[in-house]
Image (cartoon, rainbow, N blue to C red; front, side):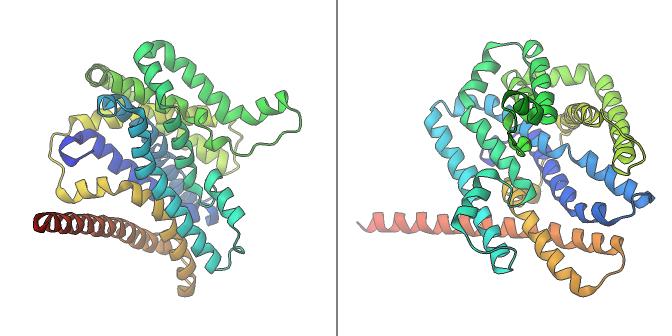
Length: 357
């Protein structure tokens, strides 16, 4: 969407989720090395777990934009071609760049077959699963448009929640019961595992004004539930991942936190009437590039920071944050500026040639 047609609340949420995704991966190293009995581990783990609202939030926004702006892509083929240009091709390029970095730094030998596998599975870097799953939703665009237009959310969403839990928690068990011995370790990149978030977004975008009114009417309940489930998710995650106690229901609580947090964040974003600055608007437009490349910046940082021989996890984390955010955001903004300048130059050059002719 052009800047003039972007809704402020959608841009705010997109920015927030983008910032949180980068934070999640910056915190991965401290979570893996800190003493699990320490308060530092508990703090970092809880912050990371609560930041996990970002990717489901992206799916929610994707579904919402699909139906909210459905009249702008009446031609399904044009819509798909647009998604290929703006989502799929940048992803392919990003995977290629990651692969070349890992190959040239001797992570693995070069293999086109392996590259193709990484491309399809989305497992070359931990965050690429989002794009693989999003492509599945894109392919099924007609189905989700039909569902959102034809059926009531009160009927759709409870079943979507149940299917999401079945897929995300029990997909392997379901497959094994149907085909004994089958192994499928990619349940985290099957679209059904995120169905509730995308379909809820589709329903919200289909009746956007009603959705905003619903948030306002239920604001106190949404806020209470979000705080309650955030605290429960944080404490349960600490108990479970630190090994203090087995929490078999952890992912169910985590889902309830994510759903309530998305609603609360949307409510707060919709209430914000201040105009978005030009800088943040530019970061909003560059958010997909930031998402694609921030992990590569983290990998390069991690490869180089070893030379400093830092003894403090906290110092390394602060340094990682101070490097990864500016480099990733600045690089994405610079790339977009260069592409925009190049297009303007080519357009003006074509006009001059046309005028002379």
